[in-house]
Image (tube, rainbow over all chains, first blue to last red; front, top):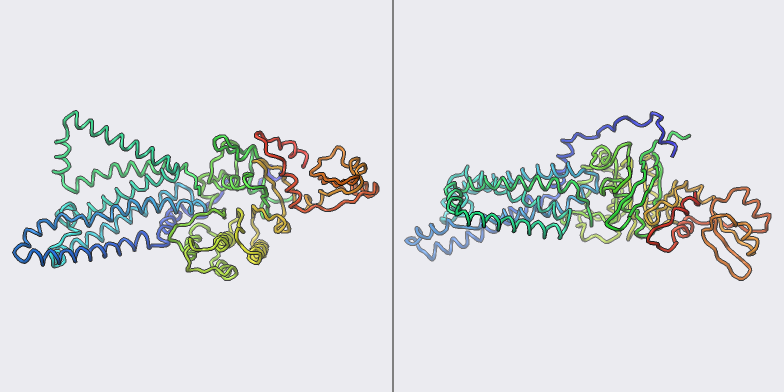
Length: 260
Length: 306
């Protein structure tokens, strides 16, 4: 007990063993320690869905015949198959944070470094999948829909050319991953109670927004802005809620404790 | 005075969860390169205390200094610590090898070759999913990470659950070997007090959120004794002393007391009394078996034991 006296042995400040950059990079490496769930499995599922779609396009081609194919191709533009990775990454983000947070803190990571590293990893993840899907879109276009007139990566909602689609995918993934990380933080900190309150609040806000739009008669204006702007403008707007969710998530997680 | 530097300094630390006082007004110091035993019953506050020291929980009041600084969100402090707990959760898709690949990211002193040799010692299957491991194998993962991390301050919270006797002995042996080659501060929280009693250099006993014993292990064992003899002689001898436990049959009594000095021993022998040694486990049981009260009154015990 007496060793606590000021005998000059205690260093004025503890030296850092690693730079902040290294620590954040290490969190990113933690997320890819087992790359299967976030980096490999999505491509496998994507391949599976493409295969199923190709089978359907073959059926459509045979059923419609050469003459009917022109009008069938109009309909094939409205494919929803390209939407699933976005849903997958909302869930993936929640799961990744929920489960690596306890490990990272257990192994001596600060919440700050953990969140920043995770956010950086999500940005890279969004970029990787956006580039991948944009390339698949280019192939799809060059092969006239995998030689069958099909659309999965060039569905009409994703934009008219490759660079629009690249940005739409990127913004879309950012939105999904950071919405996920916001809800993940709420879950990690307050569990079910937190999610119930968060969804309740969100529902109330949406209803309030609908009420305002309805009573002020601004629906056509808003609808017009979204539709006229096209997918790129729409997904760019999504970056605002994504940023709010990401920043809120940071402050929520900074006071969270890992509980089993 | 020894040159041992304080690694952990805790002053009037309290932690409340709602109405439950998990840790109440605790003060103690841990010095460099020692093996500490943090002993106490289930729910005594051992895990909470370690979570506070490792910055995972936030204190309600009081001060914690680890390596001279607050551990909360302090990377420089946290990267010098390893906290191995029985309840550690791992990502669902992790196999044993993924844990061993991730651990070096967090522990600057990580020794991969040593970790590999420990995997052999504990016969751990590297390719098995964490979820599919047995209780004992899961504990072995924690033990391996804790040892190979070589963190200057390492906490083991009940690290042996499900480990068989052989594996537990392997753990104790490896811990001692590695500790002598790479001295560091180790805090071992455990129920199996007699098993680790030879390992411990210093003992902290926590009961109902309060530290009731904070003493050198050797000294602690040496100063407690059970006095056996006729009731009148025993009663006369233990009068004005802190009695830990009392048993009696007819005219005979057996009383466990602490703070026995050499002079006391001579006096007891002269009075025709027998002094029997008390094991660490007995001592801990006897200091922590008071019935639970809503407002703990263990303060008196604390004073008396010191």
